[in-house]
Length: 209
Image 1: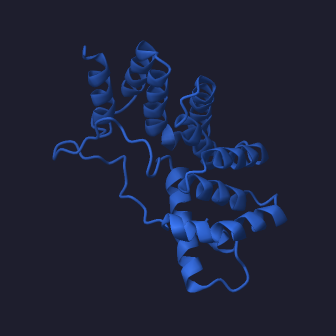
Image 2: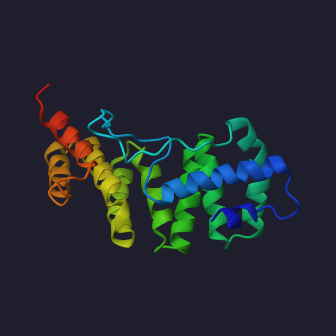
Image 3: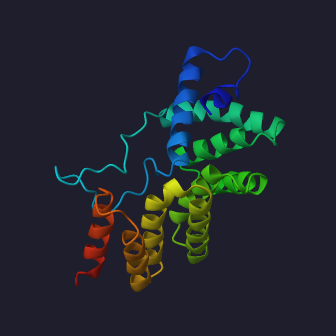
């Protein structure tokens, strides 16, 4: 993955450019294993000594907005010249997202998803981008995509199910959210430290306010 990303700029990239692209590749890899880097976090993360937060890795070091903005024109040109290279398009979408250009990010991710519908990494990226929307249609699509991602990449199930519950909460379906979390909690081994995230979600949502 890192190698193919660096190859996006073939004409003797500078050391600075290589570092920035490498950092962007790390972000994509983190998403690819089911972690929403720099976005949604569980409402209460298990951070006590007895409940280590094993689900959320340390934040990846990514280029700042100024550096990304400098890289953007070149990356846009690369995608325009090579529209069939999916990884290039995914990196462009991620760059748009980092710069706050959400609509452009989603547009590129949709194109990448159509080109590689069975790529769980792209499915997750599109799902998490749509999840940030308040539009019901986007939220429903995100819920569906997360379910597809679990089928293709079962190891992302814990965060996918956690996010699906969050989506149902945004849609006003508290009962449905609790059911999603309880159903998955029932499938987890008793000693799995990630159980704490689901237990906390269920407790918080079930507590009258």
